[in-house]
Length: 424
Image (cartoon, rainbow, N blue to C red; front, side, top):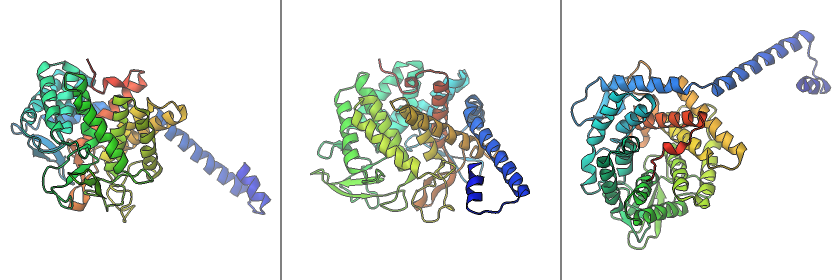
């Protein structure tokens, strides 16, 4: 009614039929808004996890050639592109199966989770190809050990942590991401990419479960140096920072998968949110918690209305740019955990609400359903290289399941630390 009084006081000459029509319009709009809010509040997590179980069972039934692991499904295709264990995405499929086994308790899922996990065993006893050992081994063997306490899994995790640590450069204070020639990385100088933050969890866990304490110190050093050099004044992140390998001096900040060197690549910012949330969990150092709130805020503030980011927040063709569902699920999972560390109840609620809204949007409009056997459509891998644009990608499926499980546990009042690997 205030709207109408203001308009009348300004001389607006609205007729009674028009007023009635507008009132009905607003009433219907409010009802629709209420229904949308209620649908979010009543988001059926189990239904979405059941869907993921069904999709995974369809994928298992495809009976891939031995030692091959699903990575992506192209636009307008129904067939998975398969990779071997050395591919950086190889740990997401077995990790997803472990999560679904945790949810459903189906021994068939456990059997196949173990099968695909063991494909990655050679990574623990060969020189490090790059920083992705956490993605590969911690998601697979790590989740497997959390659920089974199989000592063979633990042995692989600890050996892999030591392998990853060989890439640490004490003069720089971070782990080398790509120990090889990559365009624009000024090899043989030292490169560190934001994605590397996620792999620190492997080092933290190993240091607390039989590994050397130096692994913990290297992980903290990496997080601190990255926090200092990888972020702009507005807390958006560079994808890559190049350091002088001998002095540790920062040479430049660049992108590899974003729109340009100064843009906010969506998945890079997502890795930062997820990574620093995990670092706070492992260290309980308040500087990391304060920092991740700031890194999160700029991401949330710049999201489109549907809360699913375009592949880069600064891409010039928005709103006609590809979306990136993978960035959305990474952030949704992180927000649920981050909410548990937040003393500000209003902010904590905002984080959970945003995460649930993201998952509801993805579940309604991004599920692949009958198009292929992945969980989600519309992820973007490497837009500048023309790779995996508007694809179903396995890491989006993994973090979707993880986020749903975290939300399920939160709704049930259970601690989320059972999602993180437990310590002995």
